[in-house]
Image (cartoon, rainbow over all chains, first blue to last red; front, side, top):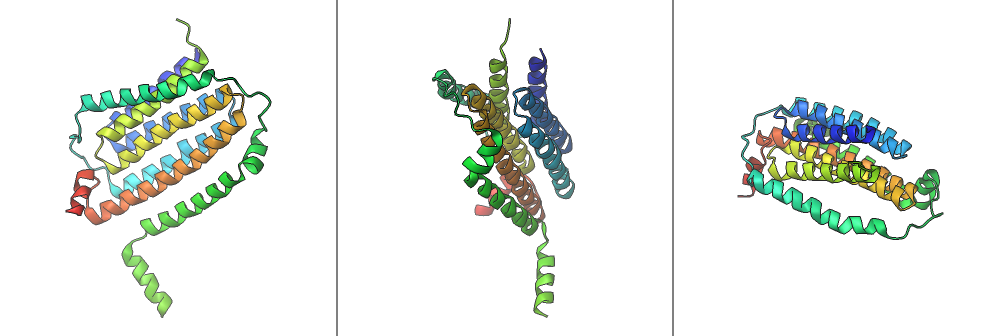
Length: 164
Length: 103
């Protein structure tokens, strides 16, 4: 019963995040979706990932959205999409069916037991390349954000100061 | 009707993916594009963790989900920063206005 309530909450929050006209309200609905997905992950036994998703997905990303919306402003954009709504709905349903057709039969393959190395060993030893990649991604994100959020005028002023 | 936990998780994963894709297909607002991407990736993360559990390798699914969380956050950061810069230079968040730049 709890799973069904969380499922309904996830789908309602996600749909409201897409449907609401105000961007700030959409960001709040997205944070709700993240929190409910984190609860679902916790119920599935992924405790560490649930905590990370709750802090990053519902916390950090929401703060970033609020920050960006405050700077860029919530301007009304005419509700005229490039394709009609009915076509978008059909395409989304077709995509879900295609992915389901590809993925669901794979779940019936024989299960490889006793291959699980434990989360800590998997992250820190087996998938070390992923870990390095994550560090690089975080640095790349921080540097690109600093560059993108800084005004061109301020960069020029700083450059002149360095030259002097 | 009795719905099993695997079915509930798969409905959640596919539902999130579908809602995110629907948002990406319809929206013209740059910030809302990032919202759509975030929703899609949440479905993928849920599917990764669930399939890891089903296949008897929960740690593998969880470690991949961790990588996806980091990548997704960086995508959001860069996407939002780009949206802010586009708003500063073009004066609009509408994708239709940005596509006029190539003419």
